[in-house]
Image 1: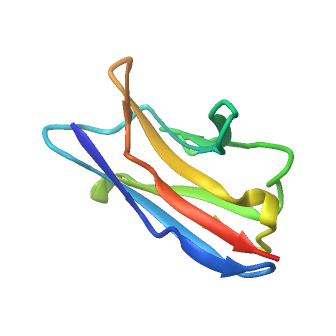
Image 2 (image 1 turned 135 degrees about the vertical axis):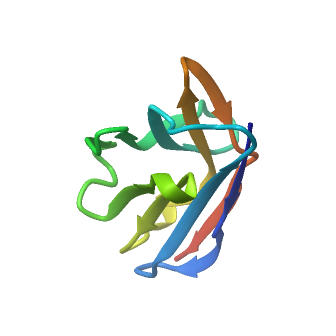
Length: 114
């Protein structure tokens, strides 16, 4: 199973980006999907997660601005990021949990300029 994340880039404060993460290989529905952010010198932190049943959870810092969703037929998770702030900058990684195993994408860089 391989995960390919895309959609990162440079955006101004207040702008929007949509990240995508698609799984390839022999994979059935992922139990959980999540997006994490990492900045230099800090640990990777959970930004948003979504269960197989569609239940979502968000970091307090992004609540109301970010929306995670999934399309099981496409084996894809999305992260819609609105009203972006400079502190949202970082490398965003997706993670799928499949049969109890964590699979990580390589990350996509998001830079929000002030």
